[in-house]
Image (cartoon, rainbow, N blue to C red; front, side, top):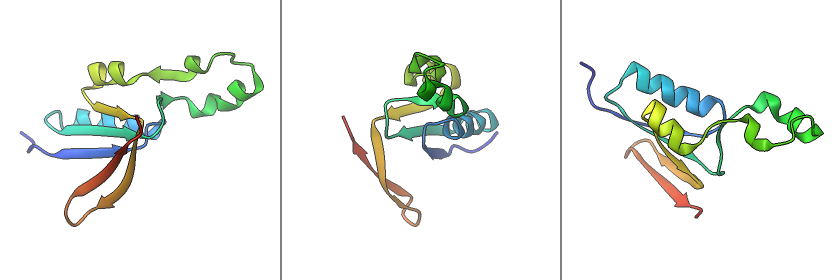
Length: 100
C-alpha cells in the first residue's frame, strides 16, 4: 500500500488534469488538488484555432471536464479561479489567491 501523500497540480489546461488523473491512478490514496486561475479546466488546446476562426462556434465544445465532473470521475479536488502566487518547497506550502 502506498503512503498517504498530498499532490498539488498547478494549471488546468490539458497537461494539468492529465497529470492529476495519472497521479491519482498511480496512488489512489493520494490527496490530489488541482488549481487553475481561469474558470475552465481540461480544455482542448489544439482546438483553440478552430474556436478563434469560428469553425467551432461554442467554446464549451472543447471543455472536456468541468470541476464537478473531474472531481467525481477522477477523484481530484479542483479549485478554479484560484491563482497560485507562491510555492515554498522547503516548507511545503503554497500561497493561493481566491479570485472569486
